[in-house]
Amino acid sequence: MVVSIHSGYVPQQAKIVRTEQMTAAEKLFELQIPDGPLGHEPGQFVEVSILGVGEAPISVSSGPNRGPNFELIVRKAGSVTEAMHQLGAGAVMGIRGPYGHGFPMERLKGSDLLFIGGGIGLVPLRSAIHYALDHRSDYGRVVILYGTKNPNEILFRREIEEWKQRDDVEFFMTVDRGSPDWKGNVGVITTLIPPLDLNITNTTAIVCGPPIMYKFVIMALRSKRLEHDQIYVSLERHMKCGLGKCGHCQINHLYVCQDGPVFLYSDIQDVKEAL
Ligand SMILES: Cc1cc2nc3c(=O)[nH]c(=O)nc-3n(C[C@H](O)[C@H](O)[C@H](O)COP(=O)(O)OP(=O)(O)OC[C@H]3O[C@@H](n4cnc5c(N)ncnc54)[C@H](O)[C@@H]3O)c2cc1C
Ligand code: FES
Image 1 (cartoon, rainbow, N blue to C red):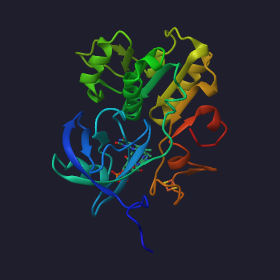
Image 2 (image 1 turned 180 degrees about the vertical axis):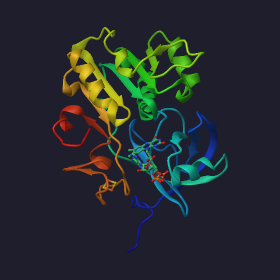
Image 3 (image 1 turned 90 degrees about the horizontal axis):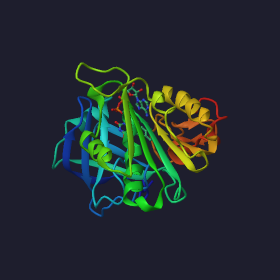
């Protein structure tokens, strides 16, 4: 079989322009591709390849309007992500994509946006947050809830300070377990939801986090009377092709790589094992 360079199977070379160690386990990569920008939608992912090691799906974390380069935040989890962590500025990695359905930012114009990110779940949400802030007058309130296990795992510390300074962003965060010098909230992310005063008819929740978080966040949102079709979730599954061909990411009739990773909760609430 002859594989065309435009087929989607062939990676293009992306040059690492800058890296930043964000926490002990997570590293930021700013990447440049020859014909940039990447042209992604917030919530989409790319397949990143390291020659001789393998490929891994990674969300694009920067907004599409933030210049020609794009950013990935990678948690060291196994062979590919560990190999990525060895790379610094000037090195190259392979990139396929962007793939999948992202957050429908156009359709959400006029809506109040409630972002709920647990742990590394803030990584894909950040792209949508950038989009909303870059088109600020198109949206109503922007409320961001962020939770991590402990203060050492907090990502985007500088950016969070900027969000806190803005009077058009409401930012709240919590950690499951504090530390002696932690002065903020302690408790799971759902504890941030009951105090919110939401305009229920005009709010869309955008949720991404570890699987355990979804059930409790959705219960908390339901008790605020948010309907299932007002909640978007981004799912993570084992993936190989990223293109709807191999079936690795399949849940019943859904291919998470192609139908998702972003889903309207009402579309998957009856799909067994989706959440
Ligand atoms: C759509 C999507 C977006 C993602 N975005 C990011 C991101 O922005 N940043 C990031 O750091 N990671 C992200 N991930 C997860 C990332 O793809 C995996 O951590 C990576 O594939 C692990 O590859 P590896 O070779 O380093 O580890 P492996 O050696 O393959 O695996 C190490 C461990 O991680 C588990 N694992 C592998 N893939 C997944 C998965 N998809 N879900 C749950 N567990 C997994 C394995 O079972 C194993 O226990 C995303 C995954 C998906 C599906
Ligand atoms: S990853 Fe191959 S079909 Fe989804």
